[in-house]
Length: 171
Image (tube, rainbow, N blue to C red; front, side):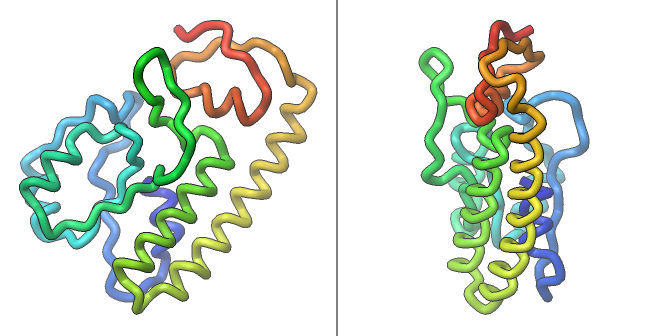
């Protein structure tokens, strides 16, 4: 979410973007808010979240910070169900990541209409890069269509669906 939002708000006067999470190998499902995070959120106007159940702490934040606006980047994206739960790793599909950028642009534009044109311009420029990446990946992965893959995390059903791959196992 940080990279997508960074591209959308690039150069927008008065917007200060902070990544609450530190670079890590693990999944954000297990992220625990720190005291520093809560202090930061007390002064924030907007929290951009993946949504789809990724950030379990969102409800707690909304209760404690009722004026904080939450941008749900996964809004209206069809979720894949893993057993009984929806899989929130939608960005692993480049097509879904493009939709998340569109969602971020639309929701930030609604919250901050003064900068709508710049959000849209930045978002469109980033989407063009993502579309080029998607086209390249489809071309490169086309010979593997229908093949089985083994993944190291439950995040890859969206990737497999986009590139017509089958997940044989998750390690």
